[in-house]
Length: 259
Image 1 (cartoon, rainbow, N blue to C red):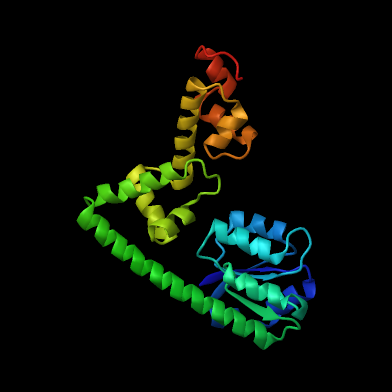
Image 2: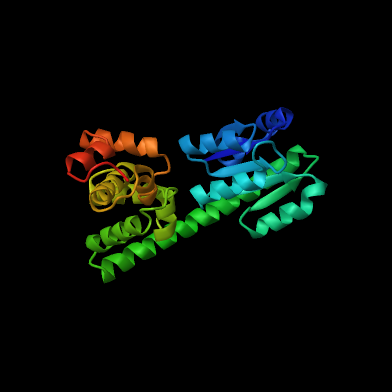
């Protein structure tokens, strides 16, 4: 069963999709709605969305930009855009850069039903390929890289390579290594004794300690260097883990105030 996010500033379109589409027949268990791309991004941060249907022409963030960001967060998500004839060429170009499908206005029930069916089929196919890749990678790791030690080494290497990447996530690692998100989550906790988010944050904070002691970088520069966009969030996390702010830690270590 899949989760669908519909992003459209026209409430009549969202209501029509909600009222007339056979979600059970498509294998869609939940429907989320947003009026614009910014609202939709907030939903992506809280929910595991599998399918996205977004209008191209929206305020604050157009549909293509939103779909691009959604794909960056989770490359496995399947996206389609709603467009008028005036934007048709724009939509067709979008297919070439990652959007999976499109539908033209004015919309009918059959148009949406058919489009969502195509998206679901693409998602099923991609998930099936991911499972195959997962099994192949697992066999290869077990045979050629020392079994469990090889799998752990793969994950550790990925963490190190993406330490400065603020957008790196469990789903991005899963796509990179060829595992499903749920399977990788289980593997990760097995090998590192913690979930991905907590372990990666601890790794980043540990690297931050080294930078505080060995450089004159400012706190916000260190935060960025360890993949944390918000310096205030960095300070809060650092204090929660080590019992003092980054500045206090540096001062007590005898390195003076931040430059």
